[in-house]
Image 1 (cartoon, rainbow, N blue to C red):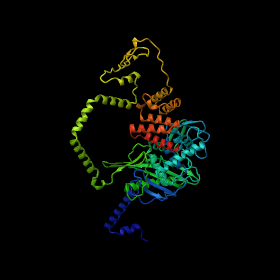
Image 2: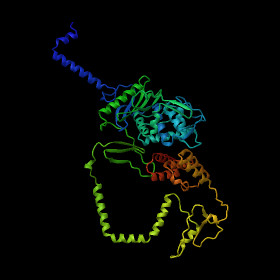
Image 3: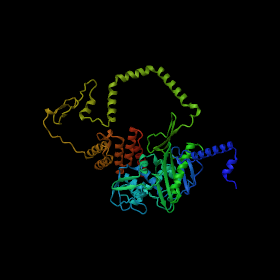
Image 4: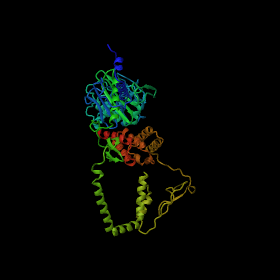
Length: 561
């Protein structure tokens, strides 16, 4: 029998050289094609064990891989992604919750005991790092009801808010019964809906930070990340694990590489294969995006837009700016991507002819009616004193400092025409108003130096509500917004009719200060007042994430009253 070497020696030299070149090229192509850095082209859908899965580009919402992603099944602890997202919408990380005997339940736990007062930050880390079912219960009970609400009712109200959020985002295959994910009849979601909620939550930097934290220490707890892929897969942002008898082994993983962000959701895998499944799906997602970053033929996962939470006009979409297009997909979420095509109609629009016609009409009106305009201008100049008074009054209201008039000053308004009016002398440093027993000028009150008056005690009634409100404003100025909320609430309890907006210095706070004041109204079960204040603050300061969250929360509270 002739061996392979003998056969090669029988071939002509030129043929042997050509065969070696083909072999070397084949090896090089196979190495480049199979390089595991995620830049090669996709070789086809990966072979995975999970019964339900989806791979999504978080930048565009395009579905890169789908295996029964719309099937409504048990989501296990992936439920906690919904719980965390809604909790971040409802409260600040520094808000505190006191644990009760209703919080510890079966399954995974962060080790809560009744009577502990923990920050929401610590509870969310316990929820997402070690998948604490007790943390989920504490969050739902603490944020779901008003003080004194029974634990079961508070959890039910929180889950109603979770399901309302899912419905608002267009998640049609989700209905969650509990905040932790233990198997319960009727507690279902789908791979598509979980991916959509993950995309929604990723817009919050606090959520990104939490799911990517390998170790957390706070409030006496030391918590370690249970997601084994966090330190093993290059570019992994974070994820969430979940295991129950009905759901099997479930994972959400989010990774970023080469300017692309990929979300992987898999349900119904096994203990041997769930991390291998996730790795294969992540690799496939990045390989697909390397070949074609965007494809109109791919299905998309989008977050259904919802009506604004307040009557404040909010833009739902922004036009193309330069080479970027901004699409609003939720109250606080927008996707920015390069424009794929030029505007329809070659960039022309019906607005230009209309604007031209309006401009010509205005110019013609000015030319024809200029004598009338000159007359109005002269009249305004003659009465400039009245306009100056109106301007000063508006400026005073804008500063939140209403003008306070002495009763004698009101009498001067009825003086005869032509009679000279004497303005009160401004009070200087070290001066005070004349006491009621001292004579005053017929023209009105007179300010005199304090040194010319006897040292008389001055009795000023104590306004407890205003004193507490001033303290709250000072706390807000130092950035202690949680304490400011409590002081605002104490002021309103001291005098329920007190108007916080009339407190000196109230309108000099930052947006977070008005959030604290509005939350005080919520604590006293006055959602309408809280919503009004938040709306005015948003009109004054423009779009603000905390104000938008508060408006959404107060909208639900007003609807529930």
